[in-house]
Image (cartoon, rainbow, N blue to C red; front, side, top):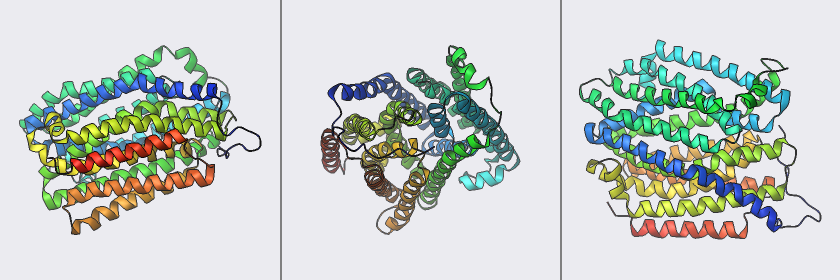
Length: 478
């Protein structure tokens, strides 16, 4: 794939006509309307599942569940080559025989990599347990973890097909269903854990993944006629050109995903080693609340934003003015939503921790105050990185990600001279996303000539001021 070209020149108007601006705003608002409620409900259900485990089994159980989820995610990244984004991008940008060969090639890749990862989990549980930092005696959990990993790999492929078709509402249904399954299975999983059977947590992850796969198949049935030409017809079962395009994106995403997971696992191990598993569980609580509310903002836009940019580029209609207007519209909507959510959480962080977890997690407010500030920067950085990804400009995308993780790693270690390991990780989170935003903004301006619209700039800066003021006023609120 080529790269998105710079802004149009010549006599083109500097500002898109009013009708075009409305046409760009309409799908952004529609995407948030369709999936925003689903994201909020999914986040609440996920929080409910975690709260049930926290109340019944305590912070250490929350830390164990979080570690298993991180380990599953790391295995899933390897099983799919972290290729969900590459799959959506290619399915959206390509057409006809080219798309058919691409999807067939990716399907074979997913299948082979998933089998290899499952065999590795079954054959080397002790190695995985040591890398993940799980307590001694939990090797059997790794073997059972192969089941949710395999199911999750299937789900990644199915959900990517829905995304490429524009099934935003149905993706929201899947998101809610997976979280609902976690909430329903949390109580029996916690009971098993209290009885000394930690496998209950792996069963919980397997149940949620199985529900997701079954429902995804059901939701895709209505599109069988549309999907048939995507897979059946002329073309090769494996195309090296398609494989190269997939690997060019998924390889960069794989490196980025593995780096993110590895860095977080390293930071969590340092917290556990210096402050204990209970504090690690409190840090996980702050981290999870931070990730969940950002997901509410970003997931409601992601299913629309990347395919829309990729389709425009793939059809050869890439236009600098149209792209810039689309980015600015998404940035404006996301900044408004992020400001409201982050300011509300900053005001209510100790009560949010008690509500979503228990009173034993109130000390996590000291970490949440940092991650909330970082979240606002993360939203803008993510939005500016998606156009780079849609253009398959993976060198720039990977450079920004790895540089940011490097900042996180260095700051987490360096700041321990003045802070605890857990709080230094929270402060490092802010620095990481500040670095990522600066790199993406600089690249987008220099390479693609992007400048935010006046409205987007005013809204984003205003939101940053509000988040900063509210955070300062509530800094010591615990």
